[in-house]
Length: 266
Image (tube, rainbow, N blue to C red; front, side, top):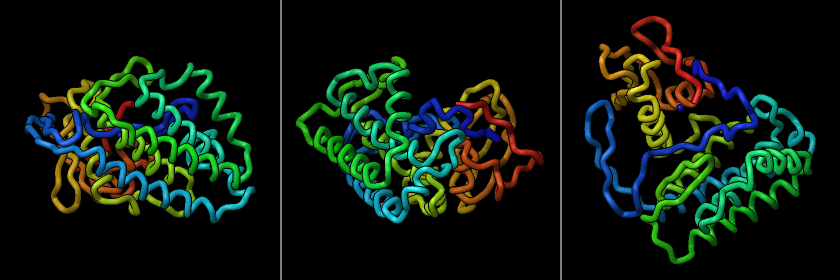
């Protein structure tokens, strides 16, 4: 979803998606006053997740121990921190699907990442791979995917949304590693879904002017205050995602008011 940047590496940098309700059910979501019907299939998202995890593991396997210890694109985090977070997030979402607290505490979450960050490449890869397998195994258990689950800080969601939440973690943190996988490399479906969520996240926010976020091919998302004439922000979808999510400052985007609107931190 500031001119935004990820300002605090102790917070979970990006785990966001549509407001999805349940597997193979249709839900409606406001998008600039338009009602949008979306069909969600958690099994489809699990397939996308498997492909994304394989991409991350294949790319990370080309690193060496020095590169893992080097800085990522997230302030204060090495690539080891990012890989450790990806692994611990998988286990946290296993907890969510199993009906347990996502993390024992915020302090425990941060301590686990700090503990695991300095490990050599082989240990990092094994952990990402093994934790991903644990998540897939938990997701394969018979369950009511329409049930409500609890995440961090009292946030609740539908179980069917969890595989896409995990996909967001894997895809965006792959980009955050800074090893050649860019926003332009993300699958188009993922980019569209994440832009839609981020636009919806800012919808109705009094601190955000009304914005018509428009991709170069004409796809459009409306966000911000409801009572203004919209400011137009136009550009390639990956650039829009980078700006909305705080991963880029807006290079490649055009705004009819001159400067891009300043978005609040998420």
